[in-house]
Amino acid sequence: MSAVMISSRKVRKWEKLPGKNTFCCDGRVMMARQKGVFYLTLFLIIGTCALFFAFECPYLAVHLSAAIPVFAAVLFLFVIAMLLRTSFSDPGVLPRALPEEATFIEMEIEAANGNVPSGQRPPPRIRNVEINNQIVKLKYCYTCKIFRPPRASHCSICDNCVDRFDHHCPWVGNCVGKRNYRYFYLFTLSLSLLTIYIFTFDIVHVVMRSVDDGFLSTLKETPGTVLEVLVCFFTLWSVVGLTGFHTYLISLNQTTNEDIKGSWSGKNRVQNPYSHKNILKNCCEVLCGPTYPSVLDRRGLMHEDSPVSTSSAAPSSSSSLSFSNNSKAAPPTTKTRAPLIPNEHTPDDAEPGVAGPTERDDDDDDDDRPPSSFVPPLASPETDAEASAAKDHNR
Amino acid sequence: MKVFVQRDYSEGTVCRFQTKFPPELDNRIERNLLEETVKTLNSYYVEAEKIGGQSYLEGCLACATAYVIFLCMETRYEKVLRKITSYIQDQNEKIYAPRGLLITDPIERGMRVVSFKGAPDISSSSSGNQRIRGPRLRQLHPQQRHVVDGW
Image (cartoon, rainbow over all chains, first blue to last red; front, side, top):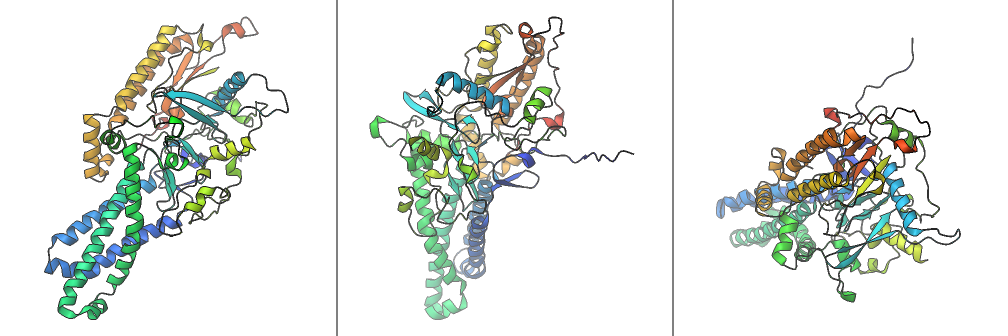
């Protein structure tokens, strides 16, 4: 009798995707690896709201209006929905190039560069494209083996190229990109409203109760109020500030990444080619634009006979053409030496914290980050591969 | 043989593919047929990404329901993607398969390229009486189709 075991378990494509994401619910949920800060965010929101409903709402519903807890509940549910939507959805990850496509691009690059004498550094892999009378440079991603579309960037925490990359947010445990930016914005906006709401009614409650019972006994009766006021006070400054910042970015149709790098700062007469030059139009495009589908096929089934390539996603179609290509190692067909691929150095257990992505913190911009731990640490410019690749070239 | 038609970013980040004819397909297919296919695909993507009354309505309605409505409703983009898939299948059956070529839906390649797959060119074959067979037109198993989900 044959001892060969034929596995009949269906393998979905998310199980073989490269990159440093974690998937849950059989590929329906997609997050970054480090989720600790996300759990903290959830705990703070749910905890504070629970205290509000337990201590303040009974009194306010009776003495002021029953609409107060109802509105708070609606707002709370909206905040949680937006948070989960931001955290669990695909931010707009671009799948890595399959071997044939990567080879095709390499051949195009070689043809464009011509013959580079050995020993000489090859020119950087850049494509220029004119958008709205602006020259935009498309950079080559050595990890994903593609020329990044405009506004895309490589996140080294998640090890993916993300379309319209904004930043990697540890507080939501995911990148913020084209597909989930509006949910992220609505999350910060609704959280600001919720924080202001709870803070205001905490004060109202304390004042109203103190008139009857005195200030100290009020605090003894509702000890949760002190905790809520503390949390809300610190959250207010950071979240309201962040909402204001993103409102500014949306009105100019810019991403956080572009803002940090000063891509469209106006130096050398460079202007943002993506802006409609009209605040309303920019807002409408970002917030009410089409809902882009995920191009990362997470829940599709993989063919059982397709081998897994460790260097690329390659859920190969069943044609024999791709099969033979996959069995070889990813071909280093060019003579060009790729600069260090940053993700090799990214430690798997890097704590997000305020320090952000660890090994490339030699950039001066990091010193400007405010020390408050409640300010979401934005991904530094060195989060993506291009800056470090450029540094390697300039060395 | 695989040929890739790249994205055309000259109009920004909207999804658009280059209509430039790849020289590798010179003696495989007529120029105007391929250009027509790419132009039709581009027009489909323009329709999907159009920012106007309908997209605003969809966005505002979805926001008012905290985006829960997307669990039951298909977005306009997804509807257009289905139209694109059937258009590509139709083109493959009628035009490309008889010429020994096969187009892959761009969404399978992250909307980066339109890829053409074909048998090696007859003129480059070393054995003269080798029977050239075009690629079988695979009907995709329903579960193999690209699963477009709302998240």
